[in-house]
Image (cartoon, rainbow, N blue to C red; front, side, top):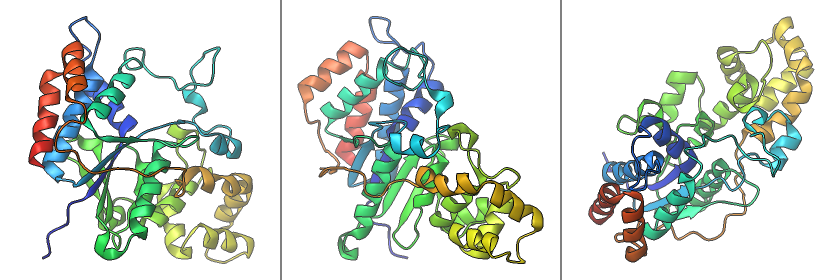
Length: 316
């Protein structure tokens, strides 16, 4: 069996630092008493991922806009329950102890030389989707396998065995990642591909994102319909043609949800053409700005975590 080439590792950074924040006690503090649990946890995750997966390229993908206007215009309830109550611009409700740690994470990544990439008006998911699409468009001989690290099931839609794109799902922890490939999608969700997962997700909905789905069409029924008709368009064509493969109840539910089904695909599917500039995603072997990194490590009490990352980078 041919060994897998060194991957391009794409991090859903917010997903990881939220996990770090809740997984590492807030008793982990800087010398001045400021909690740095999310920063320490995120850096330790990076060290572990580099050590375990030996990528040649790495991008920390960033939410430049956590609730893009084009998705809200399509479905106003999209992430509406996460909007913080402020008098200023719309912001995501984030724990008070996490908010000041996010800029420190950004500074640490910059000093390390790890690419941190966002796109105006788009989420990190869209940055990831765009970078995956770019990689898939490269000549096969120049293409790297892609591993997407996230705790968000939405990105399962990018799984593509033919292009060697998989998701490393953090639900069981960073040391016990659930590797989501085509076989795992079939096992867990009874869908045949990442594209089929996206269509199933449209039908199922996702309350955590404010997406209602089609009332009365759960995950299993959604997967069955996608398998029967091939994709969402096939399901809608069957609905509109009175295809006998749909029960009367299913047809009614699909018709009642017609407006949602027209709008949902643009919300559920990640963008593959977000305005992401050229990215130097080469995994650094040594820090980009050693003095700045040392300063950050001393100020925020990050010395041990920074050393773990530097050791991992040097050995990668």
